[in-house]
Amino acid sequence: MMANERKVLEDTVTMDGTLPHQINSPSFKGTGIEMQPPFKNQYDVTIGDSKYVSANSPLENWSKETDPSVMTGDQWVHPTNDIGWNTAENTDLLERKKQPNAFPFMHPTKDVSHGKD
Image 1 (cartoon, rainbow, N blue to C red):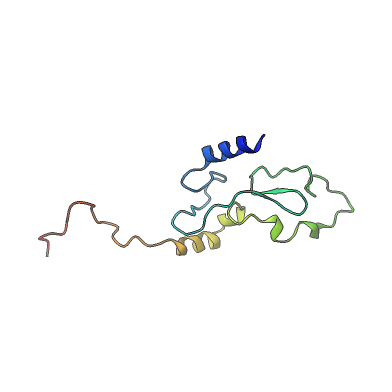
Image 2 (image 1 turned 90 degrees about the vertical axis):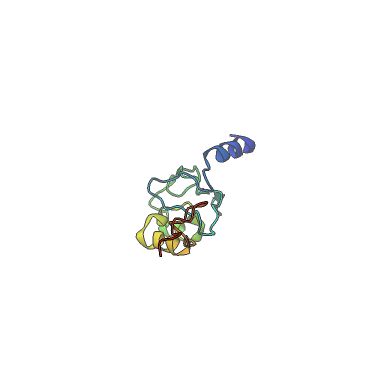
């Protein structure tokens, strides 16, 4: 896929600043955190594209000689498209970052409390 085709595809599947990458994943909307694009790590493995298969990945080339520590570190974790966001603790972190709605029951053009006090 050419770079411009990938951009069109990403623009098409991006909804409201989020990617529908995982079912039941929390929304970043209102948190101030912007979705980050996939990136290639030092092993030329694409991180954050939700495909999880890369020809250069140690997982695809595993052997008895592979040191498992090669798959550790931040270069294997996407900042916004990672399964770790689905944990209760991280979902709670996102919820605490969201701006509260100061007037949740306020009608945009009608003062429903007028004359009620």
